[in-house]
Image 1 (cartoon, rainbow, N blue to C red):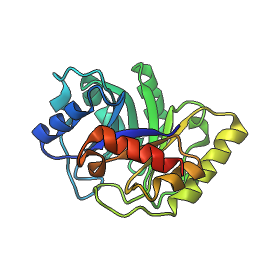
Image 2 (image 1 turned 90 degrees about the horizontal axis):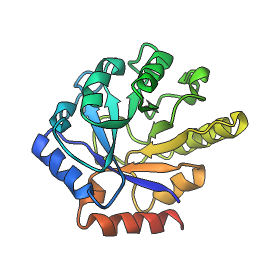
Image 3 (image 1 turned 90 degrees about the vertical axis):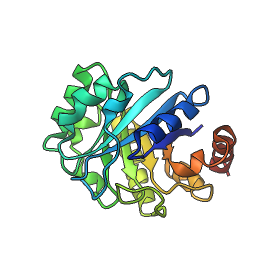
Length: 215
């Protein structure tokens, strides 16, 4: 079954904490977007707002930042379980992944919508826990799902199968009740969904997305 992960993209600390609180007792994992204003023309919360937050929800930190390795200390203090770094402004994918693993955490790499799979270093496939593909341009919520990501999902699935790797494939951006089945059909294991998942009842919305994924 596809894993549906609520995604928190906000520049308001109180709102971000409120959204996380809604996840308690509903999901086991939430996805927190961190954008530094350099990677793209947007800026979100600083992860340090979660340093004193007690939660049973495992946290993914998605680092849409310049040189994600420089953010590892912050997100570790903020309770990270998995740390996913965008590769476009990353000097060394291997160094990032190895540093995350050395911290005792799960590692991931993310590709923006127009970044090809070939941009991933071949030596990381055996080390990462997750590879995230953006199905919109990274940085802002509310964008339309771009079906060009489906081919990239299929490419990753083939790499995983041929190399007997075990990383999860996650899709992030613009996923709706009409498009989630497309991502599942292409081979994703997880999807990160933002505002539309929180509009109304979170439990009911997750159930609707799960049912739509099976169509």
